[in-house]
Length: 251
Image 1: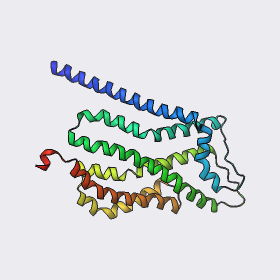
Image 2 (image 1 turned 30 degrees about the vertical axis):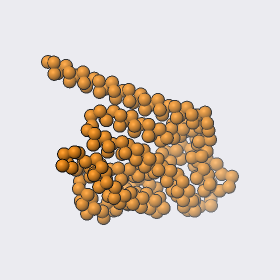
Image 3 (image 1 turned 90 degrees about the horizontal axis):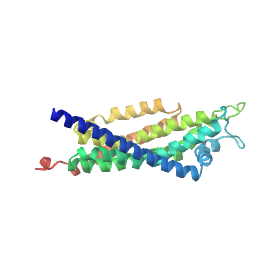
Image 4 (image 1 turned 135 degrees about the vertical axis):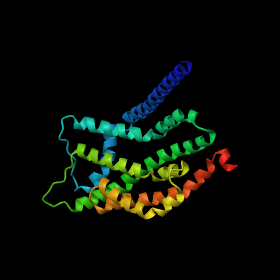
């Protein structure tokens, strides 16, 4: 009975700790959001997000808002999404702090670099999508628009497209982290991952064809970085494995 009570106390303490970490992560996102609300402001943030689309449209063209509250709601959503992306290092740190007490010393040496690299890679994927992909994709699509059609995208549809593309590129840039975890946890050997390299390349192009618009530019822009990042994961996985090896494994 005493062991059962102790187990229940431990479970409750873990729930309390999880709640506290979620609250701290939410507070971090809220602080970043408040700063962005004050400067540069939701409207300017949306103008920045919409800049690649506006640049590919005919001179003098603008987007449209078909919803009554869309001009207010969409910039707020964009600001919240940007706040979450900028606060990712803090969010991942809270996740690491929650699981760190249950890890061995050599495991902690693995988790913290992965937390940092995961957040940086996700942000890099979003930045790559915004600065490199959007302009080329919108220009490519605009060239196929008939002259009889006035290109005036709806701001809500544009936001959905931007969010899906940014999430796709941010997640695809996590490939090295996935490779490192698989190798270090012993799920798949490094030799096996090298042997299935051709299948991974095919899979990358299939994923790119599914999650991106039906144009060659965006599909190549997603598939090629995924393949290169897979190779990067194969390169750094042995280094992580050696650096985080348990004392009994080195004996």
